[in-house]
Length: 261
Image (cartoon, rainbow, N blue to C red; front, side, top):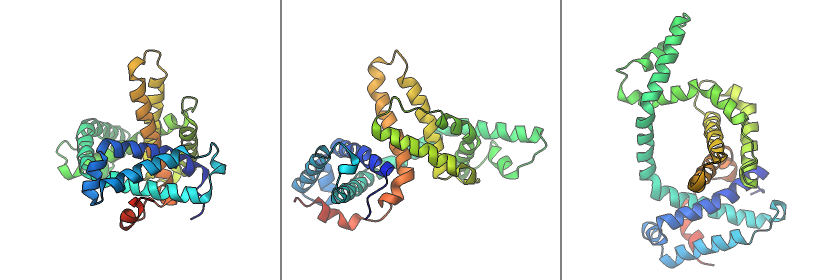
């Protein structure tokens, strides 16, 4: 495959260390047992990837295309490994997030519905979501509607994000995100798209950077840095996933990729 775009390469170099940390956290023995591979195969893959990452040249342009190909294959595989082992936890987390956000989301939707009524604008879809007895199957839709309603505010937050407190990889991803959103936000219509998600991640990043800059952060600095990194990677995932082939099925390659050598 051709060498990834500059922003996508920065994303890969931010993603791989995070995936290695996830593998370590899950446990190489657990990964081996779930994948049907030996602990030696999984350990070899883990340490070879770590060594490959540590041996990269300082400049992106000095990294050979063949090396990018190897990095991408390993990133794809680790994404599958971590994703499969974390799938149940992620589903639980999604449902918990909806339940936590639902009360405020319902209030936001109801407030918008009331505002439109006072302006003489009747939106029957919004009216259905604003009802106190809206059915359980509408919960996610209510949350998504609330997200749409504050899109404009979040857009402003993303655009005011500065990159002084970010590392080189994070900075490039954020600048790409701002340009991407600026170009496409007017075309996102009423659908929840990757543009909306990037906008809201940008607003969260703005809040985290404000927190990071607070003089009394103290022992919480590491936690905030961790959250910032994950938010930026989420933005990168939205923008580069298809380009990097992370949406393509590569599960059949797992055994071969994990073989030592």
